[in-house]
Picture: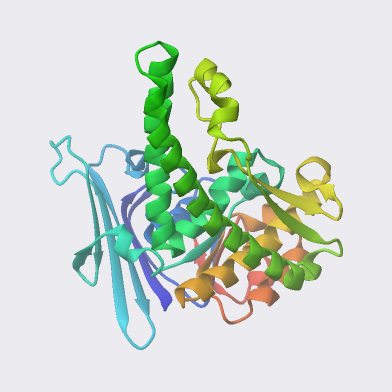
Length: 345
């Protein structure tokens, strides 16, 4: 389905605004005009989370009780997606989250995958050059959009890690017995294996697409290696008790990215890291399209601050007419001058 109209009410710097979207839309404005907020709103409607903050309170207009976002989508039929966050009454301290599709209340668990999106922001270079947890979050974020079984396993794994960590602290302070660890170890190994299975499947898909699409953006091979933490509960128990931390499980795994035969994290230039991220985003779009049956909306925030014109042109050509794109920039770019224009002031 194609996104046709976005409405923002009391969201960030938008008091009450509505915008028509085209197959290709350029959002232009100076810094502070709300370009990134525009992208944030679309991403929020897609995945239920902000890419800018962990607290949606920050997205409410100053001194207002709530925000509301609405999106109209269409192909043969019209669909409306409406998201409300905040207090129903100005004096209320209770915050509510409501998602409606065609005016019918629904949950994010039911909606995930129905409106997929691919987000590119300048900070995405951290996928290549950042710490291991950035790459784990990248993998898991994609799988959350597409795989109900993964979401359930990941949520349960997070619970097990919290409970096991609390037990390790009790053991460290001699308030529990070591035999209590055994059932948690079993759960950790079982759920960890399931989470790893999903991650590895996704990495295999990404690698196949990078082999195909990578040469469009760089003449150096891009290779992915999923490295498991091979420690066992028994082998690290002493250190776990000392730290009262979980040292076993997929939360300690690493996705290594190699550029040629070298670690991309350690040895790539900023330009090379940029090429890797762009190739990953193209692969990500293909993955979402295959898994959901829906071409994802491509969201490119401040892209020309990171992508030179030749790379941006290659990216647009790779997406072609199959994907709807919304891109922001400070000024109109020759590559987007024929797109539908939204000017923010």
